[in-house]
Structures are given as C-alpha cells and as structure tokens.
Length: 124
Image 1 (cartoon, helix red, strand yellow):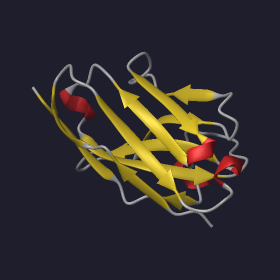
Image 2 (cartoon, rainbow, N blue to C red):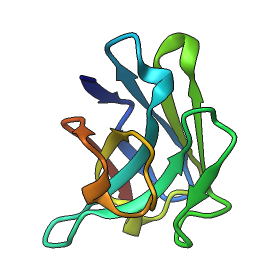
Image 3 (cartoon, rainbow, N blue to C red):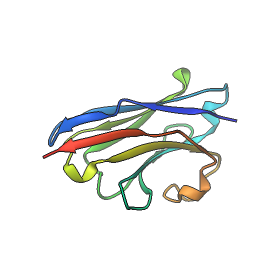
C-alpha cells in the first residue's frame, strides 16, 4: 500500500511558476506508475501528466504540454510537477495518484492510490 502527500501549492500570478511535490510512503514507490490530476470547482477530475515507474515514459495533457514537466526521484520516494507559465484556468486542486501497470495513464480509475490534494490558485 502507498500513502501519498502533495505539497507545493499556493497562490501565484499568471505567468508564474510552482513546483508540486508528491511524497510517497513505503518501500515500493519505484514499482508504481504515477500521475497528476486536477479538479476545478464544478468540473470533473482531469488528467494532467503521468510518468512510468522507471521515469522513461512521460505523458501530458495537451493543455499543459510545453508548460508542465513531470519527474520523479525513486531514491527519495517523491514525484514532482514543475509548472511554468501558469494561467488562471490552471486553478484547481491538484492530486497525485499511483498505480501499477497502468494501461492508460489518462484514466483516473486505473490508479489505486490518491493523495488529499493541494490547492493551486492563479490570479490574473
């Protein structure tokens, strides 16, 4: 079992940057594919980025491609999301998620473990 804790959210002006972290408990972090999702008020949870257990494969939603970078450090049991060029429409609660042998990174139902989320607010 994996417990996930997000951090790094906050209030930033449009065009600014934030780096989110997702710290995982347990000794098997390196076995899990990881993802970042976000949910804005009144909207469904949507996929943003994912990274394979080895870090060799990364996938991004079109809306964040070129602005966000996902990475992981298996030695530190931590995943990151570097967010640059933030826009007001990026405002949401950001969640990290973990799962094994995920066939489709964009499908939230394939991730077994979720963090509690961290709020990101981008002002215009």
